[in-house]
Each structure stands twice: as structure tokens, then as C-alpha cells.
Amino acid sequence: MRYKPDTRLKVIEHCLKSNRRTYWKKREILNWVNEIHYIEGYDTISERTLSDDLRKLKKGGYVMERHNIGWKWKDRQESLNPLGFDEEQLRQLKNAVNYLARFDNNRILKDVRNPLRVLSRSLRLNIYSNPERPLAIFEQVQSDQEAAKFDILLDAIESKRMWLSFTYKHLWNPDLSGPKLIFPMQLIQWKTRWYIIGKTQNDSIEQFALERIQNVHASEAMKPKVITNSEYDLIDAGVGVNNFEGKGQEVVFLADQNQSKYLEERKLHDSQKPGLLQKDGWSQFEITVVINEELKMALLQWGDRIKVLEPKELRDSISDKIKTMAEFYRT
Picture 1 (cartoon, rainbow, N blue to C red):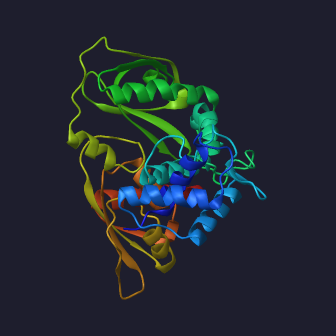
Picture 2: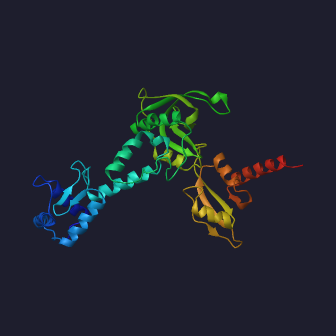
Picture 3: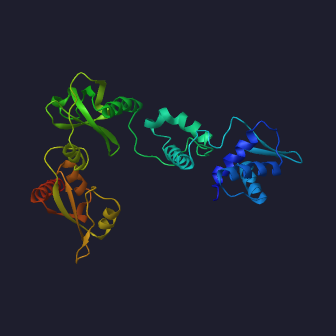
């Protein structure tokens, strides 16, 4: 049975770190490795294979060679696998660190930035060579103040027993501003803005933009709300975060050739079915969503490249909006 290369390197590390001698001849290392292999039922390795392994370790900066003396592990404090993970766990950890490092600029991750860099060095991942130039940038919360709210909000959601109280400033309706109390369900990002979705005392589901929330506190002062799967489905059935009432309806619309290609790549909603090509080159799409203003705005943004067929109430509403817009531009 063959020994996996990465596991074989650990055997070499164990050999060179032992207290038997400071420097090891290649033949001595080979005898050590093959003895371990024999005991554990693995195939022995050749001197050529060992030479390849030592070159790999030397290139990684783990070992040093002194001519006519032998090989030595450079730093006994450094290890090939400092966390004690198996190969698959180590691979997954490296992938996770590598992925998160690409979003180094994001304020939400700022508290884990230093630990990530320590892990990166321990895992010998050269991914922070230019920390001021992240490889990827995604939509951020708008301020450090908003980012500071995330710990409270996420802890409350995860606890499944905490209520959130805060002061809210509504953008255009002062009557909707003031103190709020919700049982938090989910955080959603929509068009560069973060929202907290929660259930009120009277069981309605509402959304609040984070930048308009002040003085947020979490407590267990009240009995936790029960959140049903159908209520989470209602959130998923919406386009954006506007209106969590009613139920999903089937929406059918046509898209021209160019817009159809875009919609095949970027769905309007997760429920979207593959487009059906029509004789005129347009394609018919179907989605199942709660009809709200966000949906109407999403359809209107594509102008004459989209035509809504069903339901009639949505078709009529969009038609009325287009007529109103047309009146704005009449001379």
C-alpha cells in the first residue's frame, strides 16, 4: 500500500525533529522513513523519492542542507501541519482562508482579518502580499457603525430566543418611525443595502434598513416566537425585501433575444424556470414570487426588452406606470 506524499513528508518532519542528532544523512532519513512504513504496512520508498521530498521541503523553507554534514529541520517551532488536521481538513481550511482573504476589504470581516493573516502564515499561503489590493470586492455595508451592529444582530438570530429593540427612522413616512421590537429571522443584502427581517409582536413580518437603525439592543425579556418554514418561504418568495404578505404567484413574461441570454445567466429569482424559445426569437420565462414593488421595478428596468403576460393585475400595474411615465415626457 502506497503512502500519501503529504503524510510521508510528516514522517520526514518527525525524523528531522527528533533529538537523536542535529543533522541527518540522507541514508539515515531513508532508513527511518522505511522503518515507519514497514511497521504501518506501507510500501518502502527509494532514495530518489526521498530526494524529491527533501527538495520540496527545502523549497518550502522547512529544511536546510549542509554539505557533507546532512539535513536539518530549520525551526522546531514550525510544522507542516501546525493544527493537527488530516489532509482533507487541511485542504478545506486552506480553501476557506484563501476564499475569505479575497474579501479582506469588507468591514464585516475586519475583526477576523488578523487571525486570517496568522492562519495564512501558518499554512504558508502567500495571499496577503498586497493587502491594500484585495482580489475581489463585494457590496459592503455603508459604514463602520453599521458593521458594528452585525455582531448583535447575528448573535440574536443564531440564539433563536433573543428579541431586538431599536429606534427606527423611516425614510419618507414619519408615522412609521420610532421604537421597534422584533424577533429577528434573517439578514439580507439587497442592492448595496443590508436589511434585518423580523417578526413583530402581532406576527407580521417586516424589514428594516440597517443604516436607519439606532440604539439596537438584544434581550430575552419575551417568549421567543415560533418561525415556520412557510414564513421563511415567504421571504424567499420575494424579489428584494419589500412586502412579506400574501403568497407566491406565477408570473409569466417574455424577453427578447439579448435579455434572454442575460436572464439565463442571472436569474430574476431562484424559482425561475428555463426560458422557452418562441417563434419570434423571444423567450418565455416563469417565476413564482410575491408581487411587490421590487418585482415591478426589476421588470421595468429592462424597458421594451420585457413583456409581462401574467398575472393580469401585474400586467395592468406595469402598464399604468408606463403610461404615467409617458405623460412625464409629453411635450
